[in-house]
Length: 186
Length: 136
Image 1 (cartoon, rainbow over the protein chains, first blue to last red):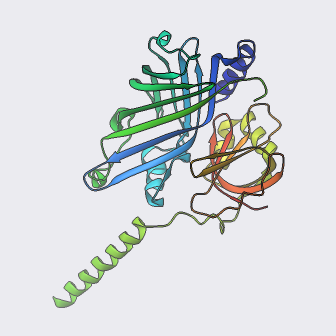
Image 2 (cartoon, rainbow over the protein chains, first blue to last red; image 1 turned 90 degrees about the vertical axis):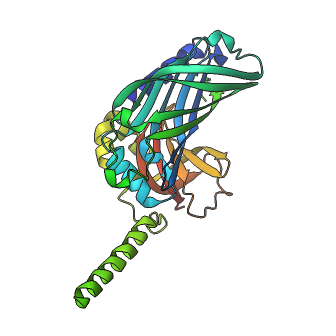
Image 3 (cartoon, chains in turn yellow, blue; image 1 turned 120 degrees about the vertical axis):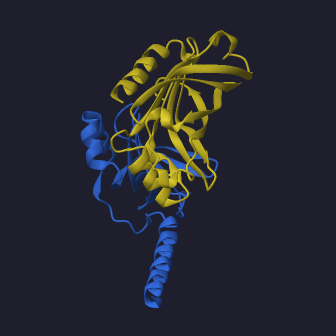
C-alpha cells in the first residue's frame, strides 16, 4: 500500500493549488450480506480508505479484510482463515472511475446517479466490475453510496460443501464513503 | 446393543452441545486479553512503512498495546475511532474502539496521550487496529 500512500501524498501536493478537486476518506463503511437458506450473515467494516478525483472521475478504495466484524466469532474466524485467507491477502482494493464524470457537478448540491466501472481485487484475484452508485454533494461534503453483488466463486474463494447452504454464492456489498476535500495539512 | 445405542446417543448429544457452543463462541474479551507487543504509535507506523509484509507477518491478528498522542477522534453513528499521531504527515494509527466493551472516552481530547490495546488488521493509509480498549 506504499503506492497508495504515495498516490495520496502526490494528489495532496497537486491538489493543494486547486483545493476542492480531490476528495478523501479514511473511515468509509463497507458491509456485506450473505443470505443463504440456513443463515443470514453480515459483516461490517468502518475503516475503508478512498480517494475520489472530481476532475477525472477516478476513484479508488481499499479495505482490510481482517477489519470486517461479524456478530459471531466463529464466522469471523472461518471468513479470515478458511475463505479469504486474509493473512496472505490482507486487503481488497477497487480501482476505477465514474463513467461520464461530467454529469456530476461537484460544486453544486444535489444527488447524482452514476455508474462506476473498474477492477476489484479480492483474495488476490482481480475482476472487472460495474456498479450503480449515488453521489450526494452537500457543500464540501461528498457522500458516495453503492450496492452491488459479487459472486464468491469469481474470486476463487472456496466454500466447502458442508456449509454450502450456510453461505450464499452471491454476496451483497454495500459501500458508503463520506468524503472530505483533500487539503494540505488535513 | 443397548449399550452401543446409549453410547452413540451420548456421543451425539455431546457433539451437538459442543457444536452449539462453538457456533456461539464469544469474541475474545479484549479487557482481559494480554498484549503480545507494546510499542509507540510512531514505532508501529515506521515498521509498517519500512517493510509492510514483514510487519504483517509479525503483527497481524496480534494484540498490540500502542501509545501515542490523539490526532483526531471520529464519532460516527455509535462507533468511535481514535487516530494516533505517528510523526508522519498523512499516516496515523486508526484505533476502532471495541463494540463489545464499555469505554469512557468523554474525557479524551485531541493532543492527549493515550494507551490502547487492540487487534492489528494491517495497513491502508493508516495502520488499523480494531476492537480497541483504552488502557490509560
